Length: 273
Length: 328
Image (cartoon, rainbow over all chains, first blue to last red; front, side, top):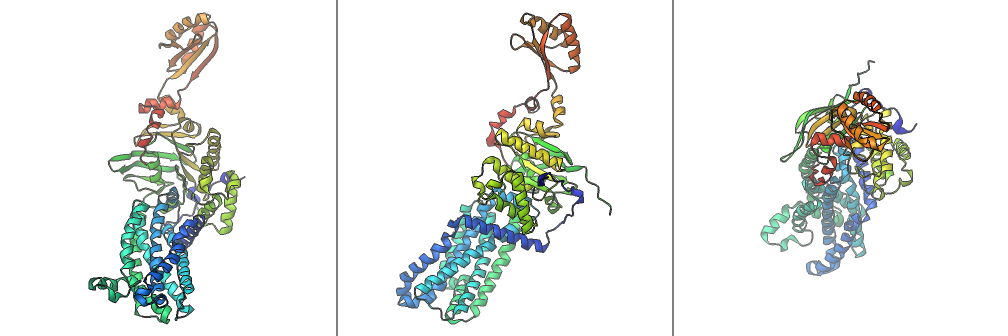
């Protein structure tokens, strides 16, 4: 006999757990990440932002600002490459929110909600899979920089360390947009809200220009902006191989973001679930 | 070890209410679904069928009332309830961009199967539902019938004892619909309980052991298909008279014996409403006495369409025209 016609175990004879064990939370999240990766492979256009943007922005900004800010392109590279790296990756986190929203609007999310799986898994899986996107953006930015003549004084290990720091911080920031993804009505409104946060956060930082050239009130913001700390941390790592004050500040900033937005997001998601 | 007693009811719901703004989509629905049966929830679009399922399947929190699935409360033990149910939604609850095979693997893994078990189970179900050839294609390229079958296959991965089917055959051609009906019957034969919603009266009539009719979020009638037909009453009698000249005489005899108004739809057919099928004996004797010969006699129960008309004051077709009223 085939499977559907096998005798079904009656409800009373089943071993039913009241809660999801932690091991299952992790397994479910990995399965959901696997699902997100399969979906990425079916929609290669999802990779446009993480491939085109690093190449285009690195070329554009370096030749545009290089002469004005650092005298020549060669001298500007150690400043701009970490800046573009952070700007690109943080921008990439936005799509976590829009894609989550689009996904949640589909019937398949109803099925996830009806399954005895960890409630957080669909969220956690989506965010985990995005690490792949960040990695692509980071690798491409460094390759572009290398082609244009950037040789990081800190050495390869520092560059890898800087990449990992960036991935970790981006993952933390993606919770902000995941939150908007969960509460917003449509993917478009997620895009709208997120842009308003993203632009000041990435451009009002030390990513592209020396802070000293800015007016006083703007300097005040740029100095407390966590993105500035992250950019400085990456610069110190790749250019000097040094783990400094800003490295720890970035980690603390990222942790604060997660501690605020992860519970908010999960709560909002559960309420809808 | 003492074995726990199987609860008699797969679903026991009391006074379920769901409100969307001003609209009470579900307004005090009671359900008692015996374990091992097919239970039909019949109603037009917007009657509150899907909302009721969503609450029972822990997808939505009820605004009032309570429900138990095999004795487990949907609000205090949702995680237990989810281990006992399978839900196949009205809209594809599978991943459109992924293939049938990938969908089954992912859902199998989510349900705790190992990689090897998930693959085995996926292959079995694809075979069972006649989807093996299409397994590697993305669902977006599936036909409506294939999509429903895959959807149901996914629901059966965990072999749940209770399966919710929300309009499982809406939009399917008659052949695929029959296949789906057979699958549903097989499920129940294997020990599942099935709750299915439908707008098709003949579907409820064909499949369901018991039917509840919902309109505007309220239960307007319930019972077996036969009880429902009887509750609206009168069977309909049809006589076919051999000799056309005697038709009028036959009408007079029918009217006299049954004490109703009879009608002739063509030259030889006499139809009349009949409260009590027993009286057909008297009628046949009276006709023989008048030497009126018959080609055919039939007593028909009313169709569920007629039942629906009598219960809700409108036909099911009327309401299908009001698709825009659907709220959930």
